Image (cartoon, rainbow, N blue to C red; front, top):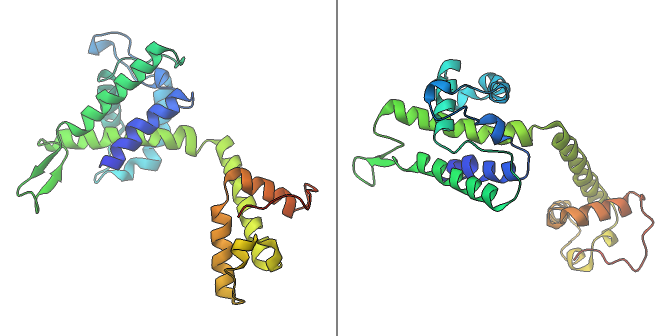
Length: 231
């Protein structure tokens, strides 16, 4: 549960501050009175995506009405956010809302029964526990909707996957001299060791190293004999 809370609170805050998750359009409130609250157009767009894809994450699927009620309850628990500007008031509000959300998810956690064999419960009331779990799921999936499944990121990931795949193929099938000396010394002439060394070497590369090495291996960059490969 601690991982779920971190994902739902800190990750969402980070991407809100990066301008990727528009909390100001998702959790906007018209005023202090609950009867004035409504699910925003942006929230409807997100929930339209969420319902068919993620509702299986609860033991019993939630209806659209239940999801919207949980979403509005979530909005009422935080200060209505504004577009993040990076100034002191923006940072204070973002941190304050994250603190309130963390409190929402941990304040009622209990161990029911004996401590070693007891059951972990989010709240004594079963309906409240379900709402807390649903709200956590809704926040976590903001990252999927606005970041992970975002088309521009998908293109970037496809390109990165191609670089990793082609580097692996080049080092696995190419001459041993491609490897830096420290890695070359680990090879013993067997296919299994070559596979493991290739895997570990490619995995050890930073993103910048992998991109630079890919350009050299594929001939996109002429390079120089004075270039030092990553050890």
